[in-house]
Each structure stands twice: as C-alpha cells, then as structure tokens.
Amino acid sequence: MASLFKDPNKLSAYRDRRFSGTQEEFEQALLSSTTVYVGNMSFYTTEEQVYELFSRAGEIKKIIMGLDKQSKTPCGFCFVLYYSREDTEDAVKYVSGTILDDRPVRVDFDWGFKDGRQWGRGKSGGQVRDEYRTDYDPGRGGYGKLVQKE
Ligand code: GTA
Image (cartoon, rainbow, N blue to C red):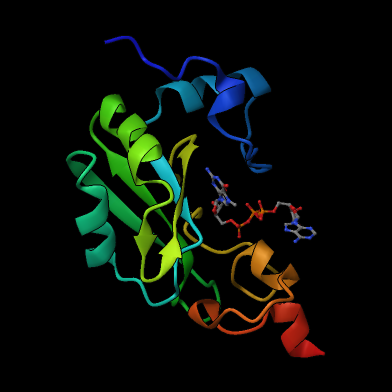
C-alpha cells in the first residue's frame, strides 16, 4: 500500500537544530527513517512499559530512553527504533495520544538516532521545554527548572 506520509512538511513540526545536513537531507531522512521520538512521557515510565505499548505498532529493534545529562535519570522522552517504515508510520498514526502513566504521549517522526541524542539539551540537564515550563507537573519533576530556581 502507498504511504500516506509523502509530504515532509506534514511529517513533523520539529526541526533538529543539531542536524548537520541540508533541509532537503533532513526531509529525506524524515520520509525514510524507522525511528520515532516520543515526548510528554512521565519521568517514571520504564523502558518495559514503552516496549509493551509501542510493540502494538510492530516489531521493535531498540528503545533509547532520554536521560538528564546530569542525573542520568529518565527526563521524559525516548526514541523507538522499528525495523519497518510501515510500523513506524503506524506508531505515529495510532500510538500518538495514547495514555501512558496518565499522560498522552506525543509520537513524532524522527530523522534517526545518533549517539548523544539521548541526553536532554537543557542547561540544567533535562529537556529544554522543562526549563521554560511554569506549571506544576508531578509526573515530570514538579515545577519547571527555571521556576524551581526562583
Ligand atoms: N523528532 O518534537 C521532537 C523533539 N523534541 C522536542 C526533542 N527532540 C525531538 N525529536 C523529534 N521531535 O535529541 C529530540 C532532540 C534531542 C532530544 C532532547 O530529543 O533532537 P530537548 O528536547 O532537550 O532539546 O532534546 P531541543 O530539541 O533543543 O528542545 P525544544 O523543546 O525543541 O526547543 C527548541 C527551541 O525552542 C530551543 O531554542 C528552546 O530554547 C526553545 N524553547 C523551547 N521551549 C520553549 C519555551 N517554552 N519558551 C521559550 N523558548 C522555548
């Protein structure tokens, strides 16, 4: 069956500033990659739970948990690597929005995992968005990092 995902601009709103190639290469990678990024995860969700949920879309090659680069503990995201493109698209289509540990997870196409991408890029170690967050979110360490410092 022909892929429903053919327009790279509709695949993902996220542009990784650390991708070293051109925009065209980035778009090509999004169209062919078998990796998804999973965001809005609880800090307490385990790799086993991710495995159980995402294997509904297809056979998983590998899961890489996103870690806080200082504490080396999960900081709310991960990458799931599939064997087939069809399963990757199914994960985006059907698993995105599923509740995992009381949170709707966000599943996004990704250009492909490279060593180093497992670390949060925020100044304090976790994800960038957790530095700016001003709400209280018990599943993600309470208040955002900037609010905690005030
Ligand atoms: N495929 O949506 C995604 C995605 N996100 C959000 C992160 N990654 C993603 N991959 C896909 N889709 O490998 C990947 C990254 C990296 C790992 C950790 O997860 O490629 P991070 O989340 O810590 O860092 O990444 P990243 O990607 O730089 O963060 P973000 O949130 O997208 O921020 C982008 C820019 O917006 C930054 O300049 C940041 O300073 C700014 N920003 C973000 N949130 C706010 C905010 N609330 N207010 C103001 N500025 C903000």
